[in-house]
Amino acid sequence: MNKIDYNGRIFTSWENSGNGEVNRETLFHYFQDGNLVWANYAGGGIIAGHLIATMGDDGALDMRYHHVNEKNEIMTGICTSTPELLENGKIRLHEEWTWTSGDRSSGRSILQEV
Image (cartoon, rainbow, N blue to C red; front, side, top):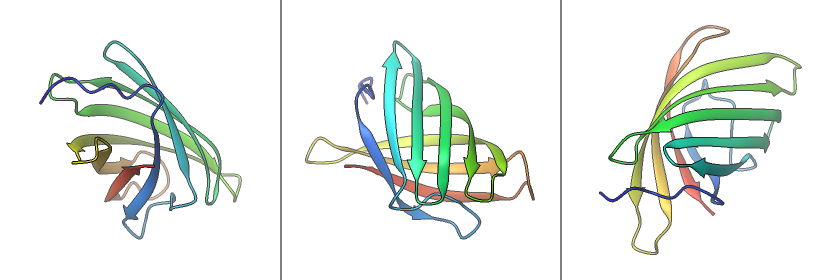
């Protein structure tokens, strides 16, 4: 897979494990500089969130995230996002994540570019 340009792309949560906090109302605004990728996200129960990641040669992201939810809790976690390039040129991210706060449980989610 060629390197992916995440800069300026917007994603929403398409699927999420029950212990996740984002949903289809959550929008992720991605930015990129070389192999450094970051995003701001909010909506759907998230007041404000940020993530930072490094991109591997295959376009996969090794990321750390944190956000404040509507309960005013700070939540943190780690995630690996594997990209799938769709026929229409958009990206779908298959994610495996683990909370590093709260109950420290793990889950899976899919983000879809809007």
